[in-house]
Length: 254
Length: 326
Image 1: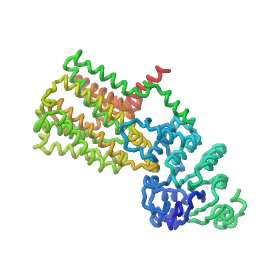
Image 2 (image 1 turned 180 degrees about the vertical axis):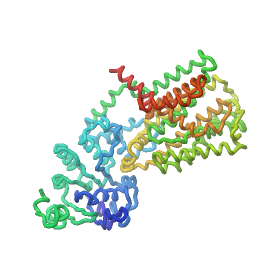
Image 3 (image 1 turned 120 degrees about the vertical axis):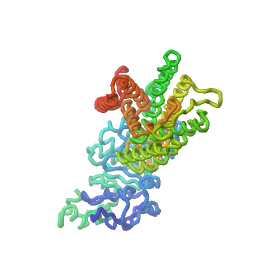
Image 4 (image 1 turned 30 degrees about the vertical axis):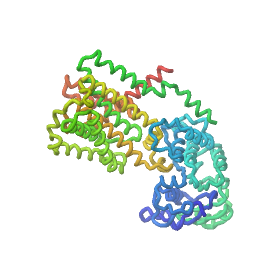
């Protein structure tokens, strides 16, 4: 059974097709990069999968289950995690509190009103474990707004991981990072458990090649190529989309 | 790995973690000697301030944590006041029952208004709470057989306790003081609980809360209902104190006054709104004996806070405390 499957998913903003008849299926533990020029519909596709917007046509399945009409919170409960292209953190809270909120949801510690939140040892243990995975242990008592940009991206990932998703959507995890920060992020992503299914939107081809063995190319909301990096690199349509018709194939791989 | 986070938390001293509770308990002890040393006048003054501080506290909880800015909070205060007043007049002035009825009815009203208004956010939420609360205000004027119409509900008897005690000015003051401390402890417990942390998350970033699996509306509704019930409790105390309830008690301007109390005191804290209630009440009643323009002066003070002390009295106190410690 596939971890995630899209069947003929379309979304129109007015007359403009943002996503057109997109179909693909992702196996458990697969790591897929979603690439395409600006405005190709990558983030829209993420928003469709995560339930932020509803498709006009098509079916989305998570672990075989039809989740097309699910709201974002139900998607999260069903095992889908996501990060945002623009950091979406709890800026006035500490790093620890940011992650703890997500852990709280996973452990079902919600309508508890009598005991202080500090008195849940399992909450502390799990939160610290996640902080360790995203290399933020030493920053745990800092407010999110006082982190460096790269650290904020790490926290963005940490919050998503803390819900223990089965499928994780990463929207440009290294956008705006320095080379060093990018390297650290790639290391972190490579260390993720093997059964975690990853879908990554990324512009940095080095990151794409380091993480994904399958690439899906979108252009004008349509899938124009889907295959391993070598296949995609040779694809005429892809070359045309990126560089204009007849461009030299060397250019894309660089 | 764990040590960093733990040691970070341990360095927060007992005093800084419990600063609010210590301040509230110290304040309560100080206030407790007012009837022993002060005149009857001061007992009345502090009774009114404490009642309004419960009201402001309940709104401050909504504004400071889930960041729900309501302009209809007086509806709960007023319904609590009418409920207690009518029950005491017609059925039984037992304070446990009058407060219980007030709590139950304002809770119910908060549930209805909450369900209707929490579909919207931001300014739309504010406008809907305002509109619904004004409906309740109009109802209180029109339903004369029950409320006494624009003349108000008069002749509310002093409350008593199972025939053991008929409250006088002093004992009623102690009752109000006790309930103010309990209200503070209730909200403080809520804010520190896992539920409270979710409310803070919702106030800070609702989109992300949804993305990690929370459905914000049910949490907001729960907070709204608790705050409405406590506002109703303060209204009931107000009715007993004054012996009269009028529609003005649930007019929208009363909601706005509570909002000013919260902002002047410091939204985002619990002690701030209580202090704000004291400041605004003292300002208005002190000025009223000298000038007709007390409302204008209160307005100016409010503007000064917004411009120069965003975090209100609590914020000023906090930065002063930090300067002293350094």
